[in-house]
Image (cartoon, rainbow, N blue to C red):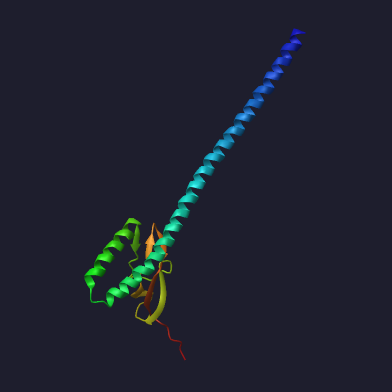
Length: 157
């Protein structure tokens, strides 16, 4: 009888041990899932913030374009220079950089061609900037609108 009782207790102990191991394994899986969720959610929030910042900067650039045009046609350069300095400081704080592309190879990821003129180059080269473009954290806020020169093959008759 004692032997039966001991066997029964041992069996119950083994069942409890297995159940505890199952619960522990489940808890570990849930903990790992939660850690992954927190990381993914943090990345999603950061991406959302960056996209929001990009939209703010993009809208702000329209104002900057107007100021460039006004400066170009105005006599009071000093006042516009001060505004441009303030705007440049703001853009620097947002890590916004102007895309440098003049006399460089055309890159459709950064440039938007608005006109193609005949040139000697086999590859398209940016020859004029029509509207400045900007990047922020390696993300194009607005592509540069450019004129490009390229060798134009004329169809043979």
